[in-house]
Length: 274
Image (cartoon, one colour):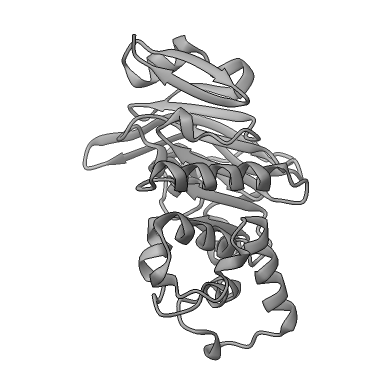
């Protein structure tokens, strides 16, 4: 019997969003994650930082119940993975990444794409019932991401950065308790990246917004309002904790395997190799 089948009785904190304890993932004899411990609580904003192949996406797939761990215990939104219908949990998690982007109908206007997120639907709105409150709520989500002016634009006509803001607004349609942003800035030019980072920083400042996890491999992409970081390298945790204490040149160098310098200005980080 592996560790995933051995769970001690315990009282779960009501504010617990993600709990990984001793989590490992082995596929085809390769250890993708090794003994991961990570806890996210309500309204915390976390950055998952590490180089390509460090296990960032694998860890988030496990945490969001899309991938089964080999060892360890996983709780999502206070529920033990393997003891609950994961479909019910997934409705409470907003996800924005390359997966949803590939399924969106390019001919639909941005607001319609946002509103159909209520039912996790990738068809037009005539296939489900939506009322005026849904359309107003969708418009509010676009407004929060500085994308209200895109409401009537066809998705296929938008830039990469505009599409990302629309997809993040879509992920908020169910008022999720957890928002996962998997490399949301990948492929964006400098202007689009900065606009999106500013939008995420503003979203994170909202006390009513959900707990958020941003996956990235660039410190320059960390929004100002994100206050915790977990660093991964070769499937292992290098460090985790408050960003003010954890984001150091030494730990960053250990994470990326190269000597790095680090500075912070106006709440944003910049790293370089001397």
